[in-house]
Image (cartoon, rainbow, N blue to C red; front, side):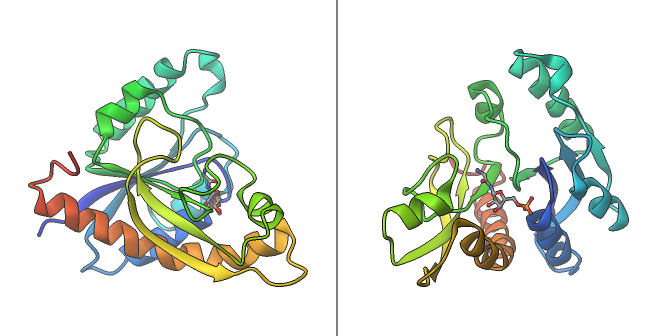
Length: 201
Ligand code: GAR
């Protein structure tokens, strides 16, 4: 099966992006990175991507003000220009409009640091602690118009330990995310391949 052209959208550190780039360095991995795109010009992950030899660009959302769709049209042009088949959101912290989500639906996935459907949105680690949960985790899901609401592709969990703080939990969860995301992306590529590249309907 043809390797799908992968674009990764980031806003910061980019450690999940790096995990995807490492996995995709294997020639038999089903996705091939063609673009890393950040909405923040100062995102650390841009340098990591460039160092890995991947085209990395920033499209700053700020000059677009409240016009989210205009910002997304600029992103969309860059994505199309790079020949993108599948988008992986990796710590991309902008809420996307229905226009963009519908355009890429079935070809866009996200990683979220909770066991969805629990704790959509922000502060996921603290909310798991506050609820007295025995475990936390991360979810990779298809992106749909509702925030963190799309169909789940794969999850991974870990126990919450006595004395855990939001920071300690996030730090222990991150390597779990780095294992999960490449696996889940491969699964998404496989699903897209099986459905004749139309993705989920
Ligand atoms: C990750 O923990 C990811 O799950 C989370 O942001 C972090 C990004 O870290 N994503 C979200 O909260 C999306 N709602 P990274 O830049 O090092 O990959």
